[in-house]
Image (cartoon, rainbow, N blue to C red; front, side, top):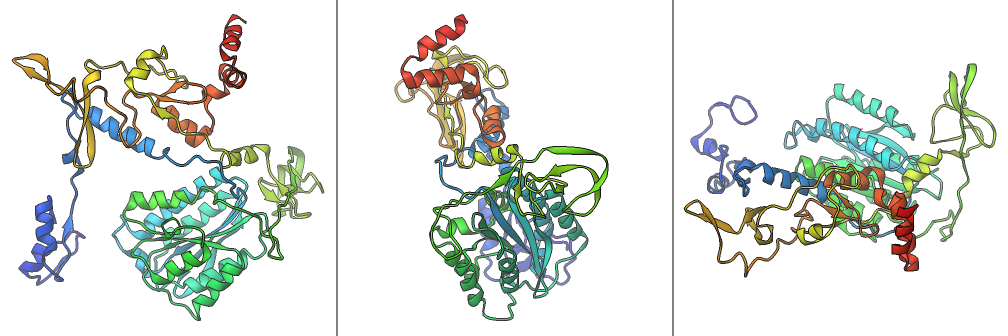
Length: 495
């Protein structure tokens, strides 16, 4: 017969057939997994069976609510301003061993890692435009450089795409990969972070020597290591994460991915700069330092000239503010004088990590009815109207998911209020996942209402509130400090 991997299995017993069958419910799943050590029971979760109908008899409102909850989940994070290292030196270590050919993550661990790594590189430079990234691979007990430290995401993505034609082989070597990463980060400036992110799918490491000596060298070099496991927790990985991150809990430095979505979330979490408490000088002391940067302007020559970074003839480029050497792209370090060259937009895009935009609060129907804002301030999309009987809206839970149902029932075709609709339920409160019942989200600073799409766009792309950045929002903020916001707004409307 053919099993779930579409491979022919010959002379298989009836017990093994029952143990490998694909089940549809909890009862069948428990029956399949209760076969002992002969086989593992595989269970397919039919998530569509848990989607329930809404008050209008359709599942569209429930699906929209689930989508909105998924968008809102990414925004419900800590927005406390912290000191972070926005200039980062990160080395990404990829496990290219035979263990990455497993199919527990579809299509395989290897192909999924390459796809997520490409997305990670793009997102990393979007969030950290003045940082440096390098990639190291390990297989057959060796480690090799896939892409050196640089600030050009296109070079990294091109090198990752070349791995699609190769197959994972051999065993990984954590010690060789960490030694190579430590050597690459040895000359990193003291004002930058030194980080290593490991994507590890194996359960062992083929090392030539004592890996604890390498871990001690990483600690003395102030290099932090984060690990994302794809199989199970490994003792040496836990030791490595604990010793290089003594002030952080293990759940933030070493986590095993449960599924494809969880794997992506863990990987994208590394795009946020880590918190720092001090700057380490070369002598081991604590000191504050200033970094000299140059902000060159783009030039276009009438005839091709050689650039200082690649020695290639180009017409366009940027001139170093100190030595007037020509470079192709920014951000980079001048090859001649070593000055850090960036654009003002790069610095502005890194600024939001230090002062993140505060989360907007959910708006209930009582607050929405008392306000005259009927459209989203960002995209001018009309908000949904208050449904009939919204004051008796009640929220019920089914299998870990929520749905809204009217606390009314129909008797002979005529709606009549339920006996619990008035006494027990007065107003549907905001759900635990942060989804607004009215579809409105309010900025506590300017008081403007926004839809969920503008909420996501403002927090993940713009990192600024459109209401606070508008003329009325700035006047309101200034008036709130002086206690005369109403007078200022009235004068602004007259003018």
